[in-house]
Amino acid sequence: MARTVLRPTVRNASVRCQAASDASPEPLLVRCARGEAVERPAAWMMRQAGRYQKAYRDVALKYPSFRVRSETTDLIVEISLQPFKSFQPDGVILFSDILTPLDAFGVHFEIDDNKGPLIEDPIRSADQLSKLREIDLEQLSFVGEALATLRREVGDAAAVLGFVGSPWTLATYIVEGKSTSIYKTIKCMARSDPEILHHLLDHLAEQIATYCQFQIDSGAQCLQLFDSWGGQLTPADWDKISRPYIEKIVNKVSQSHPETPIVLYVNGSGGLLERMATVGANVIGLDWTVDMADARKRIGKSAVQGNVDPCWPCWAHFESWTWSFSRDSGRECWALL
Image (tube, rainbow, N blue to C red; front, top):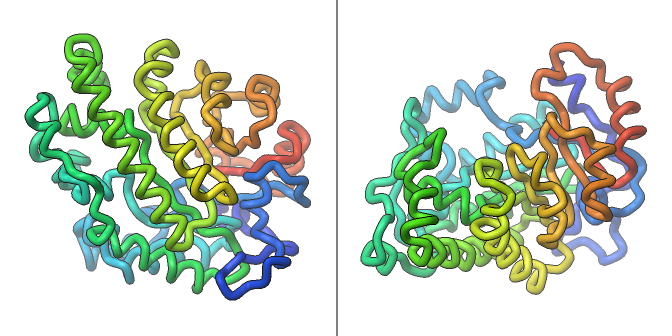
């Protein structure tokens, strides 16, 4: 079924590599993200590489550590290309994690297969905050090398995507010290020590913006910004705690790389769509609980992506669903699982 879902036929799409001429058309996904009229929606999967593929499970058995898999250039490239070789989607997203850059500016972490991310020393005081440093991109050379290799490997068949986590979402791990379902510590900090939290968020915004620029310079043609836990905030709190720092990233990256589209995805964003549309991102990501036609009315001119129930491949046929998707959503959109 997955093969049926993601077997697009790429028409008139090519990667704008350094050696390519300026007249070469760009990948379908990039053109969609810019809001251009396109021949069909682009299709890719947000969690494109992973355990659903035997090839990935085989690599995971050989290299049990997630950090080894996501911080070794050859493994990043191999894993990123696994679904591309199987399904030929319109986008190839870097195999990585939103926490990957943390070590490079002084936040040490591990990823436990059962417990998830674990932060050695959660930041909850001004003294801890003062120990953070500017991002050291040399520590992230494997990301740059992997993106450059992916551009060469993919050629003109698809767009290469990079991604980052939003300051608020990263801060939930840095303050809580682990995954959580209630975000009690950081929400209390927002009330009891707002200055510490906002200094942390501002520092994260600066470092992540630099990391975005690094990814683009290395080969990423589109960037997805995950505010994965933005939906855990009230709309009023999102305005104060998350939106300003997303805007800071978007503004900085858009000024330095205006040609690179930025996608903003907030999990559980039904109550935030109008707010999301004001941050300057080219594309607004939707989850399956939001009607796409309704979202188009609410967000205005931004392109949209997503809205596909993850269980959809179990019951739908790609051809009939694509027709419905295109009819309901308009032209500047793409399918995302």
